[in-house]
Length: 367
Ligand SMILES: NC(=O)c1ccc[n+]([C@@H]2O[C@H](COP(=O)([O-])OP(=O)(O)OC[C@H]3O[C@@H](n4cnc5c(N)ncnc54)[C@H](O)[C@@H]3O)[C@@H](O)[C@H]2O)c1
Ligand SMILES: O=C(O)C(=O)C[C@]1(C(=O)O)C=C[C@@H](O)C=C1
Image 1 (tube, rainbow, N blue to C red):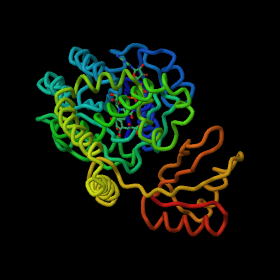
Image 2: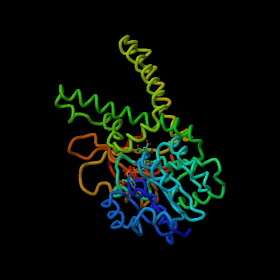
Image 3: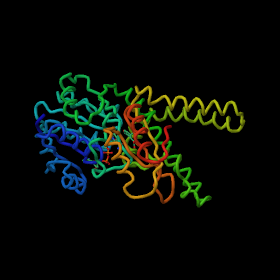
Image 4: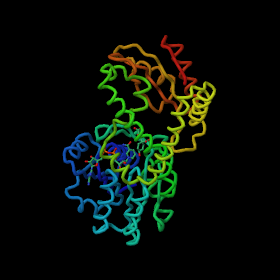
């Protein structure tokens, strides 16, 4: 496709979308806008965008597609400005916000004016912020939810899907209320829990000075997301507070039961509690119908020397085994941790195991 794409908010998500759109539509012009001039200049220097917007209004007036990728409170404000801007006939506006109910309410005046607003939310991200963390494979195989306005036409959704085809994501239409309940449970609520675990550990560290150094494996896994942008999460929590209140009330009841269980020390009850959680958790990737796409992880206990990651990935590349994600679990202090490589299919993972067993002596684990 050709035309001008304006991306408002040149951070992790805006930057990653810019890269995806440019790759799929090389003749499109990607214009970036950000209140943070440093971030905007960085986006231009890194080649993530073609142009920096001179003013927001000027860039919006010539855009064929506008993607708002700012924290959700700002998104609402930007939508109000767009309502009073002289936009091009046929422009499509979308956003990437993690909440949808309030944003779709804010979209009504635009829709009433005949300007198509299609809410969007790619269900992939990271705890990192800013354009320097942007990457074009961020959304590959992830679900990308759309919440169209009441009068959105099919061809407008199709056009947006075409623009975003380079994400290689799986598009899914969801009503805003369901979106917020779903993401409230599997994304926003876990975020609050992660932050609260860190707070509790911080308090405990006053008494146990070794805590910071010992907090490894499980604690790091479950609290990684607490390192995300506090601005973004403050906004998400405010916009989805009703759903979150309901979930937190249920969490209180759940914790009362846990306290009782721990106090009673009933082995059978404790076993069943952990076992049932394990069964449900282990089944998640197999079901793969929720908002989290299926990934098949392979854990590789790598030694601590430079180039070990490229060595492993080179073996896989030689066998043409594609991977969807690669990361290090920093479970040990000062040395490399376990290398985790995710594959899209069980078959790819099996081939990887076969290949790495043949070419290395590293220990391999599958969870
Ligand atoms: N980070 C994730 O994992 C993730 C995943 C999916 C969706 N989202 C959503 O996408 C949006 C962007 O998240 P991100 O991770 O890219 O954040 P980010 O912090 O990396 O980038 C946001 C950018 O928006 C800019 N900005 C803030 N207010 C602005 C305004 N009024 N006008 C123009 N620019 C403004 C900031 O300067 C920043 O550069 C958020 O709504 C978030 O909820 C985030
Ligand atoms: O992987 C992470 O770091 C994320 O937190 C990503 C995550 C999520 O909760 O899954 C966070 C918020 C977004 O709205 C979508 C994705």
